[in-house]
Image (cartoon, rainbow, N blue to C red; front, side, top):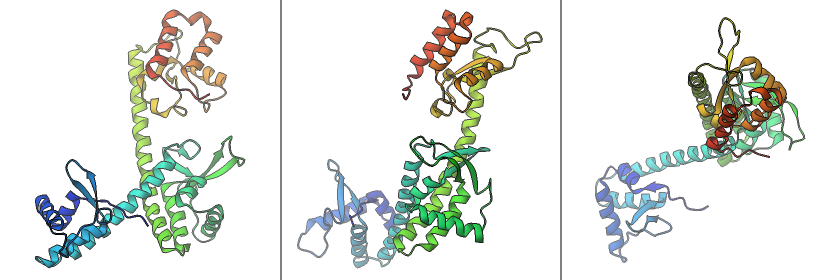
Length: 337
């Protein structure tokens, strides 16, 4: 197993309850006499991370070597203190690695995560990959839970359509909430015989619920940001439909809608960008998405340009077209072909 150098000088000094300068003096002493019993070996006990300043990061063994030295030359208790610190540091590292596994899987959420009533649910196969287990284990676990500790629909899991052109399996699939992921992964961890895998699975059990809770919070924040962006877009456009150039009033019985030129589903990073919004009559909005094949179909500003030219050529004037092409230049979106 490769040696991990995860303990900085500052962290080690704090764990030992000594000053940073005191630690540097001890390290200098270790290096001063090659013939004494105290020695720190580069590549085993520490590595140099900033050669110009001589800054080091220590392995668990290196940190213990310094603690043993302090115990031998002062008050006892340093070794016990460092062992506690190493345990805590190891736990932090395990949880950080678990988050890395989860976030790498969540980094491309399309076909992995669905939102239902403002909550995020992760696809069964995504959970399987995060837990680094196989389909049979997931299947056996779900069968056991159905018989012994039922998962609650719409709370622990949902059933939703799954569509991925690269996959053979389509149709209704299972998606799990943070609580549902905890129930499934906890049950799997109890069946694992390998101690290291069991520990890893338990750590992921904790971290995946936190990750999905963070996504839920982001979803709520993004929803608020989107609504604020829509309000600003309507104010910018003086509450006017940018195609027909009319406002809602007693004569024009119109509902004004802020339309995303680059759709939220296809381009979530632009969802709350005001430049990505145009105000139009809600009837035109519905007509556009029908023209695209439904509200669930991703769209771009070019699609909207093509729609206006085809359906409303009399309104495809210089001002509107210039505005739409400016959006393309401002946002500089790479559109997948």
